Length: 241
Image (cartoon, rainbow, N blue to C red; front, side, top):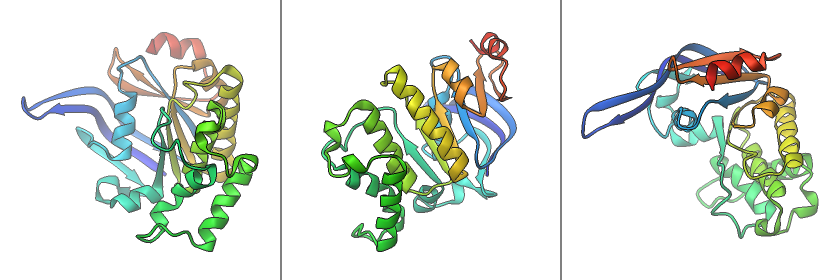
């Protein structure tokens, strides 16, 4: 369970001692099994919200809690066991095999040498089988298609066994069929694994089709608005864009 309590999301300019609030939200609770899209215009604060949830920056006010624990009080390793992240750009892991990439998700549970136990190896293999990556297990990730690489990155996050997964524009560089494939996969993961999954996206029609919940940044009121499926698409679009 993830809770936002009286959040003010934005950033501060330390030298000027100024704060810029992008948006606020009162009390929101996200439960296991929810597939949540974060939408809003460019520059509205989607990335800032994700950075705040990830602990890369602090909220200007309010609190984020996971399983009723204040997020700020958790160590980096504890956070990694609660939350996984898939960035929008695939970089830094181009010369790993698919198996090694997925194995990186076990890092929060391994020793200083990052040696996998039998249990770790079993979890990695289970994820590879679940995502249909068995045929690519020994292939270098640089040789994969964009869609296959995105699924491999999701595999890394899935092997982390965190209750919350955040994906920054996971369909941005994919063709239409692969966008649908990835979103269907994420929907199934949320439901079957009982995880909370957040995505940011500008692909509104697909978000409304696949997601169970939408939170939208309304730049006119500077508020985070909350909507559940079935969505009234035109109403949301007219209010937010």
